[in-house]
Amino acid sequence: MNKHILILYYSRHGATKAMANRIAQGVESKGMQAKLRTVPEISNGIDFSQASVPDEGDLFVQKDDLKTCAGLALGSPTRFGNMASALKYFLDSTSSQWLSGALVDKPASVFTSTGSMHGGQESTLLSMMLPLLHHGMVIAGLPYTHPELHSTTTGGSPYGATHYAHGEKGNKLSDDERALCFAQGQRLAAIAQKLASQ
Ligand SMILES: Cc1cc2nc3c(=O)[nH]c(=O)nc-3n(C[C@H](O)[C@H](O)[C@H](O)COP(=O)(O)O)c2cc1C
Image 1: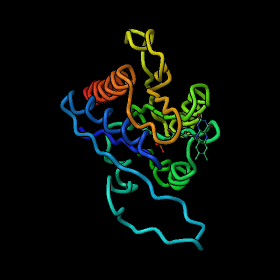
Image 2 (image 1 turned 180 degrees about the horizontal axis):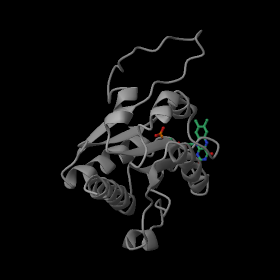
Image 3 (image 1 turned 135 degrees about the vertical axis):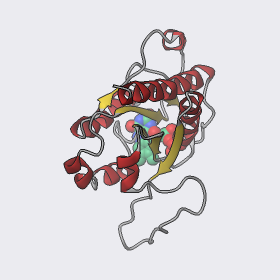
Image 4 (image 1 turned 90 degrees about the vertical axis):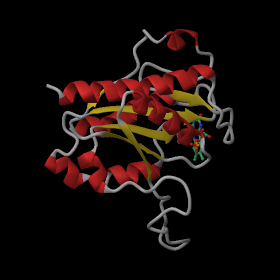
C-alpha cells in the first residue's frame, strides 16, 4: 500500500500549520509517514512571481502527491466562511487527477482555523469536503467518542479538527484542539490501513 498520508494545507500566519503538524504526529503514531505539503500564494502576475520552492517550511504540493498518498488531510484558514483561495486554486488544477481517479476510495479529512469563535468553522469544513467527494474520497470526521468534543470551549467539531485563534497570531492550540488534531491524524491513518487491507 502507499505508505504516506498527505497533509496538505495553506497557512498565512501559522495557525493552520500548527494543526497540520499535530495531525502529522497522530498519523505517525500509527506507523504511517505524514507528508506535509503546502501551496503557493496566488499571484496576480504583476505584483510578484512565486519561487517554485518555498524559502522556508514545507514544500509545495506536486500533483503526483495525490496519486501516491494513502489518504489526505486538507487544511485551510477560514476566509469569509470558506477555504482560502490558494488552496482552492490548487484543487481547481486537479482535473487530470479527477479523470484518472487518483483519489478514489482513499480516506480524507478536513481542518480549519478561524479568528473568531463563530466565524464559520463548520461552513468551511463542509465546503472543503465537496471537492474531495467529487474526487471519490471517503470522508472521515471525528466521532463523539473523543471526550474533548464534549468538553471543548475552544475548537473541535465532528466535521473535523478546528482551532479558534483569537485573531491572526493565535497559533497555540488548546489542549482539546491538540487532542482532536492528534486523533484526526490517527483516525485517518487507521482507516487508510484498513481500506488498504481489504
Ligand atoms: C481575508 C480573510 C478572511 C477571513 N475570514 C474569516 C472568517 O470568515 N471567519 C473567521 O473567524 N476568521 C476569518 N479570518 C481570520 C483567519 O481565519 C484566522 O486568522 C486564521 O486563524 C488564520 O490562519 P493561519 O494562521 O493558518 O493563516 C479571515 C482572515 C482573512 C485574511
